[in-house]
Length: 214
Image 1 (cartoon, helix red, strand yellow):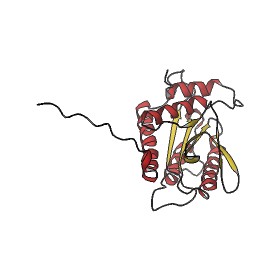
Image 2: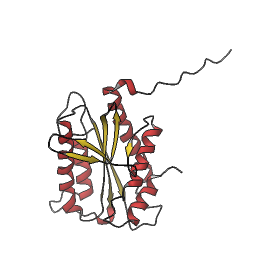
Image 3: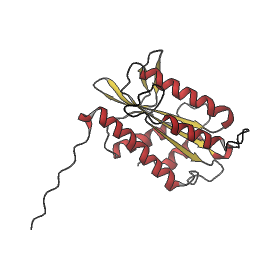
Image 4: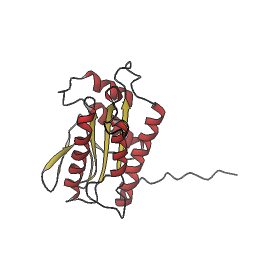
């Protein structure tokens, strides 16, 4: 059975916080989404995280597409379910540092970021600049702009913020499902567009259609 985004969210919330496999179903959902979009062979999730060497250190990435022994696409999966005001700034700093670490050695890498955020824990920032979730999403948009000729290290190619409410019943925790699905589709397509620009040989060949007989 395919893993829906709702399945992944419910599985995350039912697991203890110290469970290292809390995002395995989200990883599987992403693998299936890439497969649906035509990219087969994305690794990660339950099977294994993928260790990628960076300039400063090796890091395990949640998902990776590896071709000829070299990573071409990396995905980081996160959840922010508590203490948004304390976690959001650190998540942004960590993301940019992790991206820059691998981009130093492989600037052609395509990097995506998927994060589940619980709106039950959201609040207004003290500076009056809106909520922490809006602040986080706005900053993600600022750094998810890595396209030629803008190759700055620390930027990424795509980000998908999934807003949920843990107070809702299982199966109904994703907020604005249609919008989340649309953003997910745009996220996967944006990453694949960049991947195919940099690795044109792996672009799926369109299936030729036979002309209709007259």
